[in-house]
Length: 269
Image (tube, rainbow, N blue to C red; front, side, top):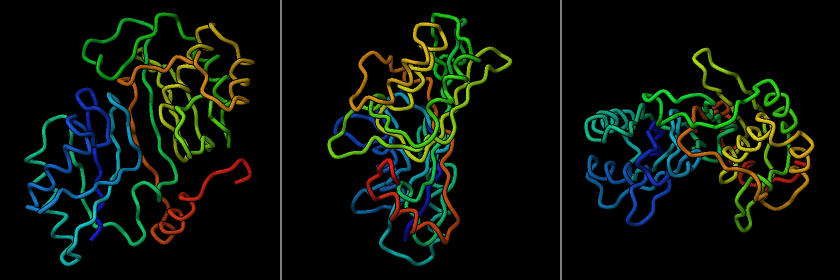
């Protein structure tokens, strides 16, 4: 039995998604409580759509877990959802639990992830300080938006990613939009087929450098030619970032998408 879980959390007091011995993580918290409420001999392994870093929040995280008994899936899902709503701490919530369609994999079946980074160049609203980062210089949102369009498409984002042995840094950036909300904060939406470690916060950091006049667009374009991480990029604080949504194809395309995503990306893909 494979179940899909839709999850949200305030990342402030978590050391990221991925379980780590001796540290409080979203994965560890959920696996502990799922084991308890279902009275399992061992904690189940949760697989998520995107591993968020320490301090990053989520409104639309998706994960799956496998249970040995494939009977009465709807009943098990409903009961697990009910019990988790009562048991979980206030900074993490499971918003839905349902049987996963055939071929569903929370990570590999996803076709895109959408993040929003929120920042302000003004005084931070005290009530929003956990989700909005502050920058010192005034941000020219129109200039930032023009620069953002240079990063769209299939690119090698090595300059924006932390190196991981054997991992590709080629990604398809589908959307990169910046708007200033009526209340003042700047919201930068980033959507791609997948992301490398720290890629979103590095992208935003580079765009802020252009939007505040510290760098120009030639520098941004030059970054895309590099094949190693660029040390001069300011990685933005984690608390401004929220995983908002994960997109999946139609049910009959889930397995095909998972197989495709497991293959190594190249610029010709």
